[in-house]
Length: 479
Picture 1 (spheres, rainbow, N blue to C red):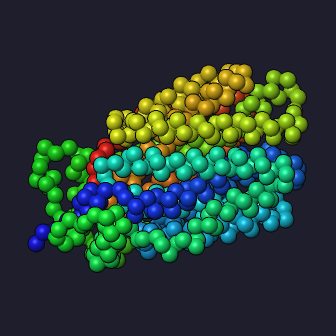
Picture 2: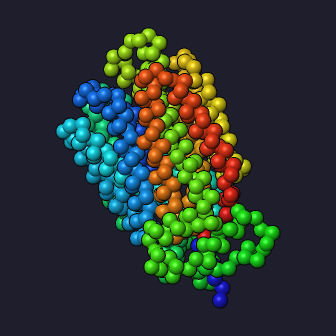
Picture 3: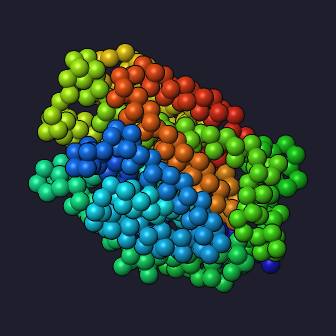
């Protein structure tokens, strides 16, 4: 009997209206996460002014969000692999929007910290949007569509900077929290239109449901499914091709060798998924991904915070004079808006590199470029040069992070994809927890050189780690 896989079906149908709707819904999820994280650049000074908190407690407000994201990334990844991508999406979205609105009503600093931690738990499920979207995209242009998907993140950062510029002078920080939670809330009414991932359904042996989703996709895209019956464990030509490279054969074959019975065995669940991620075939990829996610999160979110701290630190450390809150607000809005625009050329750069040079080379080249932009900032520079260098560093950091978010789901098999990407994302959140201590605390203590050296060392080590990834996933199927 003639058979076909989800990769075969997606290749024939191509990217059409159906995937465009999935792209828009998943993209709005990323807009919501970007806004919640960019909020951290604006919230600290106002909380310090209202409740007279110390610089250490100001840093804590950012760190607890990333700590919550660490917990949420693991939890929502397991939920989406165990109960379905749609289940992970709806509950993480509900949780994020609910905690976001409640945090605007915080009566004191400790309550705000606790609620922002819970917002972080909800936002930790954002990687499920990535896995869900990529499982609908044909292999041949997956890199390009991931870059387009990442534009929604950039849209979120620019939208939050613009929102803060309008809302904070006219109203207050509580209204900014309310407006920031709105995009996540607006996803809920349209949840009924979202399809379950056909790859996930195949991995659960729900072939009729997977076929139904693919038929809906074919109708929406005005195309036809391949002839035959949908299958998940079809043999590939790589099985007996000893000359085939590891990047083409290793992980796809391993995925097909793991049956649905194994996925539902007594060792199923988070323990089985973790054992698979740390198995001999995936151990090297998993450990390297964990470190690179940590380094990328440290660098990217550190750059977001550096934007709001570096210019003021230069002035206050040089003169010993602290500037007024109003002047800091003006500098903060301007610098954050300008450097947020840097993500657009960063995305174009990654779009050019990702399907030309491959995932690995794209990542390490942009990380080294980010180091080059940060190098001169070891010494104090003029405000204009500082903004230009941060612009270039932010573009490269965004480009490398985009390719990394594409690479992680491509490496792992379907039945542990969301868990694997979730744990890697969670490890990255540790970098988000630590970076405020460097970007805020060290700069406020006038230790700019030491802070920038830390960024340089971590980025260089991450770039070297990318060179040692065992698998190049460019053009490879996800089944």
